[in-house]
Length: 386
Image 1 (cartoon, rainbow, N blue to C red):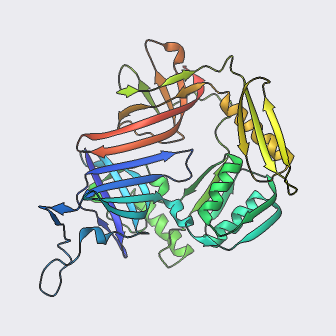
Image 2 (image 1 turned 90 degrees about the vertical axis):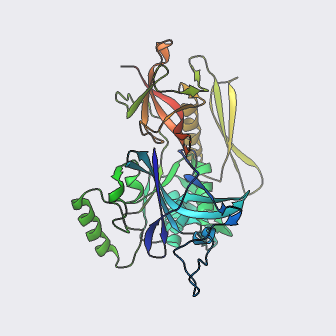
Image 3 (image 1 turned 45 degrees about the vertical axis):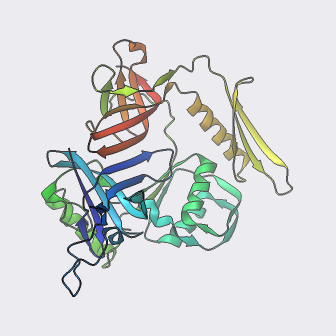
């Protein structure tokens, strides 16, 4: 079991020093993915110094924890026998020195949206119009890929970061919102250690890929700019009743599930009522209900959108809640590789009626001296066993 971590120090990628623990959390429910790297910073009761940074007397002058700063780019690789997979791409959000340890807290590329934007009041504006304003406030080279045509009656941005606006939109719409770039598209791909420190823009996948990416970089901008091929995705959640007949990977309770807290939810007799609530200018509320009378109620309070959009949101939540599937999670090893949004087969020789293909909602990957594991939370059932 091996790890490799690179942090962008000024203008080039440099390997990080000794790591004691890595924690990576990815979920379709969260706006951003997160990673925490834990490192020792004391040796023989003395703060560790960075030996390559020498003062005039020939002595190390910088404490190791001062090497890492908010906004530094970071990439995390994990794997076996020098065959590594890229697991995380993002930025350092915060550096903490508590309990004699250094903790580097990181956020994926949506960290770029932690930027103040100008106040603005929208009236009868489409979601795409609002998102375009947010994107242009961060970097006009970022493209938008949005599934929604909904219109807000009013939407106010006041003393907010761009990421705060995205959080509000996610709360209102239930959308999956994420950032995609050349780097994020390479998450989950294999690399040899010798292939990693190759190119400050991307990684060595193949010579043709490198040539193509460098060409695109030259066309877009001569400056180093991770906006290259960057897209903000605002997508409908996967709740359609499609028959998925193939999985990315398979898990079995008898083979590669170490332990679990899973509970299978059969929705045959389930009753659910969804209520969407918005507040009008005069202080009154506007409500839309969808579902079964006498069913368990789920309430969502959102910004003022059209009544048609409220109805669509209510049906979307109802469909999601009425899908059979698992609650809880299970733990497996680093292989097979799995990520949120994957379709995975889950099989149980003792209860074959639960067999089927499920969507992955979240994956928590941890690495330490004890090895690497993934805690996987499956969601809705996509199809029965073939």
